[in-house]
Length: 229
Ligand code: MG
Image (cartoon, rainbow, N blue to C red; front, side, top):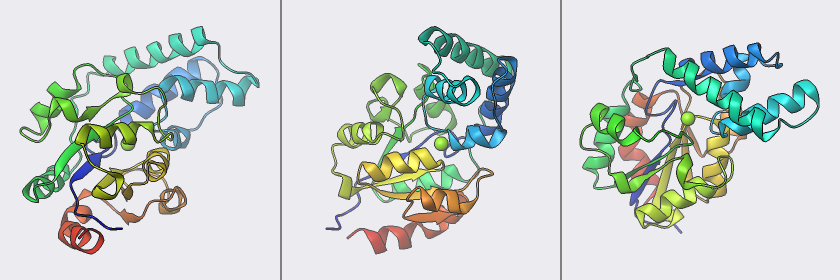
């Protein structure tokens, strides 16, 4: 049953921020140091998974065994230190602000659901997008037991917004994030901001696909009117 739209749940990396290229660079450097078998595309496909799960996947592929908890922890620390050493200023995704503006003007709540584990996330979001985010409506890696593609992150997002799945919409860029949102029963739109083929996002189950945030902003009124009543 369609309902009125009450909340939009945004993924962060690759959706609100153009941060994936730097993450992929750090992952590739660390994976090469550990002689793991990988391609850059893998990191776009694994996006949304916890860092430790990504390492485990590469160990299984390369060494035909799971990574030990020590290996998972240590290598993820190395990746994080490397990523931070780039000192790249967070780059908001082009036209993400236009989408946020339209959502806010529609009187719809804004929630962030990310697999990222940064304590300073709200500070960054408030600085880059002033007035759009609320500390009670952010789901990070610290809030969940299971990362995407498990539905838990988006289910917690619904709870924080106080809405049901039928009253929400998710904006994602990654296949595992789409799977997580769809598994939570939420209408999901994808913006293909990376190098993956559209078909990968369609196969993951997205209900609508946009080429970028501008296309989503331009279609916002139609989307809201058509799918929510
Ligand atoms: Mg993402």
